[in-house]
Length: 273
Image (cartoon, rainbow, N blue to C red; front, side):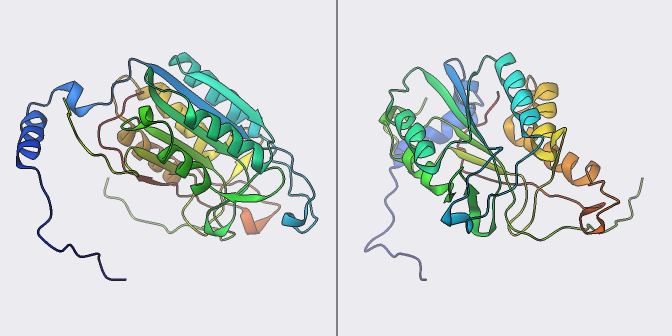
């Protein structure tokens, strides 16, 4: 599809743009970093058991053994960082959307950020599994994009621990050598989504939790005082990609396999936990 054309030159406000540039050049923390002095929230949608419904072909998806280890670690790490953590277990699709809708309509003037963790099964095309049916993450993010005006400019982070397909990655060997005013902010700004795998590939989990969530918690715990979220996530990518592999010698199809997390974001400032 062609790019949308404008009838005239693109509208750039010279006074605003020059002022913003001057501010950015000062490297002042209040310009470069999100304000994290307010309330911080983590909402966890955890799924272990599912229902036998028509959406799942009247077959109950397998339980997610080990997911409670992820919940426990997320809760501990984020509460230590003074986040208010709320955990929901095995909610149905409508219940998940109701929780997010309620949150999106609240006044968040005193809020610094909203974080969400989705711990569940997933499938191709971005499907996430609620207790009763699949749904899209977009159903959640759109409510926050159009929620209370106090959410504008506030970071919204999503940690998605779910498969994104059924392909398995065997890996490939490599040889190593030893102050903003009167700004109109895009609707899709200030989001970050960390996926546990790339599109079409599975994610791995065992009785000790999942590769991605466990590494995410460890890296946040080790580096939150010094690093912003993008540095933290880059190290999570590296640890999962380089140091994690499956161990299931009795099942060659999933033995010694690899996983690659993926991140997309539209953050407009640096984010530190």
